[in-house]
Image (cartoon, rainbow over all chains, first blue to last red; front, side):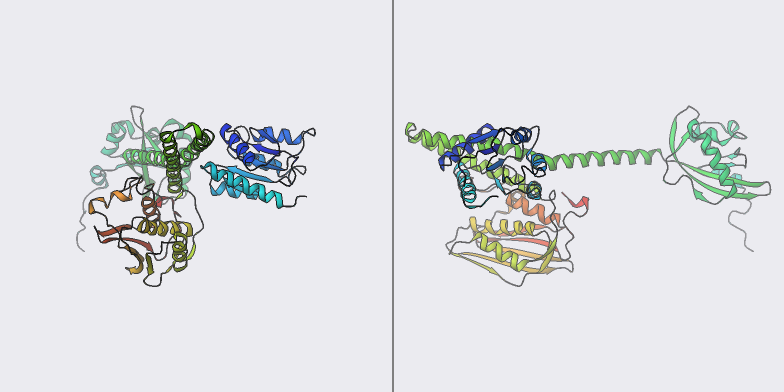
Length: 137
Length: 375
């Protein structure tokens, strides 16, 4: 990541998936702190709390209880304070409709979680590489 | 003048002989004539009917409205069916109700205008209709459930499977020095099975997506599409893949046609047992309305007894440890081809090779544009 002091917000409810992301980030030496929240609703509360540092990127699961990823995007992408934070969807779903909805709501990327952990590491490596090069407002 | 066939027969005779229930009413709505079938149908003896308002043959709740409609009818009488599109009910003497179909005919007589009503008992037809509607609803909901089932199951099975895969990977990495050779082999097999199940789930997803997820049908130039599929499969150097004649352009969803060719061609490649693999693709007109495609290989061939079975979901002819296959490919091909109104079959000689054929309509209707065509 370009900025190393800002947190990565991981919106994900599956414990092993959380471990997977954290482990993969560690493996590729991404040192940003990871803030994990279990659903969209908690993520919005966190993002709107002025005491919290805004994350440099949001890694978003789609299938979550209470407020799912698409519902989260519907709110976050219409919020002037939040809409420029890049959101990368990390999901099990390979459904075309989920992809269409996500991109309609302005996501920066859409990654299907691979079943193979090594491939997962490569996915995280690509995300890191991109957001290390890309300029941000 | 020749004598009419029914010369000398009275209206009464005609009514007595009719198998339909017939009543004749006057301007006041009173029953003037009722034939024997009316007695049987409604359970009233005739003497109870004559001179009574015909509304007695209707359930109470319809009587008032009917009186108005009857009065209207006498103003502008014409032969017609009654209550088109409405459900009409008759009332028996014992209080039970039954579905009827009624047609009305005005009769001009010296005593003034009368109206004849012919009444059919349509209880059976109604029951059959209701039965059919119920079955149709059940079928629709079962179909809907099945469509969602494939998706939900696949989706929700993937998450835990991924966890198993990750945890197994970490165990074998983090504790590499703790595993002996047998332990390492077991971990390898465990992860292999995770990948196999992952492919099976992907197969179910793909299969359930056909017909459920619609793409826009566009004109697909099959020369181009088949070329792309061949490039994608990148057959090994010992293969010759030839397209024997120019392929047509058809209206369809490109992804689906790609799946058809990809599965048939990759089977031909993956199961090849000869040092020089030959695959030939051809297309001919089949009758006036269809194209017939063929994909011929010089592979091991398939015994005729398996011709049906190989198109079923998850059926494979080689042990999965030898040729890694989900057994989804050909069932997917079948589902797609049939969705477009075509069919798929094969000819094969064991040891010599196989030819898979499938047809597509020349003017392909957009996939599943009518609900009924979806399997």
